[in-house]
Length: 137
Image (cartoon, rainbow, N blue to C red; front, side, top):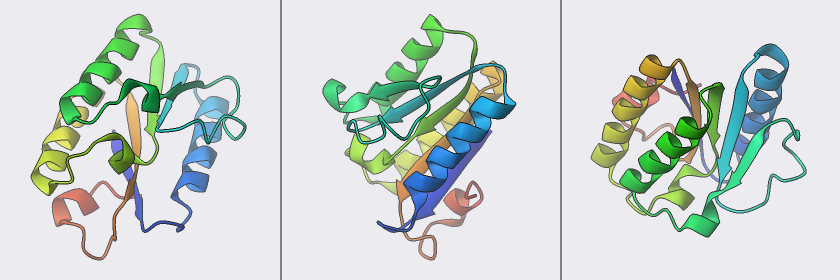
């Protein structure tokens, strides 16, 4: 399952993501991974979640992010949730078609591996394409 938290800057996406991380830790038996650009969530995310500071990896592209997700999963098959905060701070490509292709890849990966993904994206929900809106929570 792929879900997207959409909203403009300051709309509470990160707070909601932190709440979803806590819920996943309380309700699921698998491991939870949180990917963020900087170390801003260090004290907000419970220690049971694996927090990855992706800023030190200079991700930049969707392909690099796919590789990071696959690599983390290859090292731990017990992951049930991936949370990615400030998505557009990780990838440089703001093209909607590229985002949709990535989401489609995530959907396939999610179904194959039984992992839930939640992305936090700074995007005005009123102007988001319908193909992206269908993932909004």
